Image (cartoon, rainbow, N blue to C red; front, side):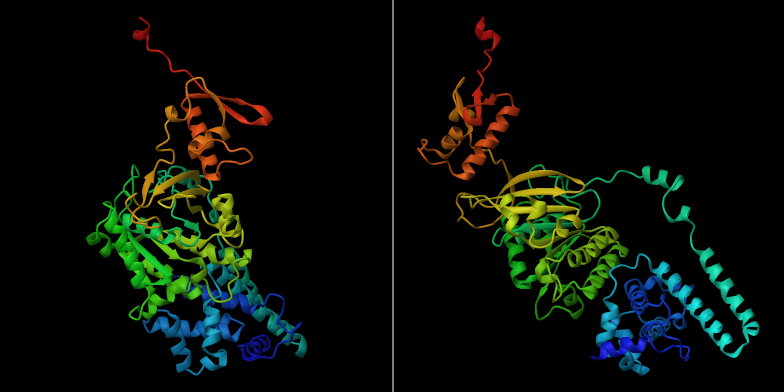
Length: 529
């Protein structure tokens, strides 16, 4: 049995009030849970501002688990001394009074620190700990009184505790105030409608967005360029609106700081939308570097500690009225802690859900870069990410960035989401004068540009979509062969575009083929006269 197991066993057999208790299967009653009490302590670490509310309900003596009790007492002493409630400060305080070793050392303290991902229900947890504490006291009094036959003498104390328990239950909010109803529901309806800062790409509410892509597709440059445009308050391309202009944060565990900076500098030279003078002061970069501060380096692993630091960073910036609005996380596989299993839905949800909560709390969009799995060939953003399906369920928007077959100067983007319309777009990333594979900018492109109806089909002519694909490919049909897949897709896109514009009709041909017939152009009236 290792030290942690020994400590856990001790927690189940030692009463902080100094009394020996009757054990039931190694625990003091069914309501006792060391894990639950330690989770409450973890929530205090996450939200130190909630400590006064917690202290209105419990004290350290209400914990049954000695580990939780000692850590909570240390938290109080740190708070009383005026120091911020941080992991190192609490460790120093435990060490000062000789309790660090008895709880299991820094490893156990770190384990408690990492237990919780949210402090949203901290007062509910405190009420539960207090309820369990009162019930344990009542149980002890009953057992002691039955043992010495003095139940009458203990009845007054028991009655007082029962009254405390009743008062504790009545102090909880009633069902009507727990949610929204009546006037509070009407108030929600009357709120101004949220408008997406980047329509067609981001939902109206700040959220977690996953960007899926294969290596060498340009996912880091795409996310970095958007971070620049966001921070500069400019339109990233074409007819897109100007982005908000709040600060951007780029956290990269994939590449060192120098390489990320080089990528961002290349983007500003290739685009008129952003300038170096603006983005350099508005974008914060956290990546591997000898000079990176210890605090910032904690965010290069987004475990419980890293997420807590990220949350504190974003909320502090918000309180200082200089918020971060756009955060790039590069990448999921490098930012997750050791032992993380991308194929485990429960682990994936437990890691992603706090990031969504951080986005909602801080008002920042979090763009998490991820690698694609085997589903990428199907071109579906929601199922393209490598690993568990929870990836597409938790994130509020999914982007899939892909290469364009046989067209290295373009990229295509598929957007899906819970609060966003599905869309497919294409971007030019360099010009004909540049080497294929270079990514110098991101400019919205017309995927059908360069293909004219007059060049591909004559008036009144009928042909199949496959025959059109051969013309798009610039070759005559070859018996026993098919046009290349990208030309077949382009022919289908052209057919649908022409159909929507009323330039062709379609009908079913031999063996179910999709035939098209070009309509004759209407003759202007003056030509008839």
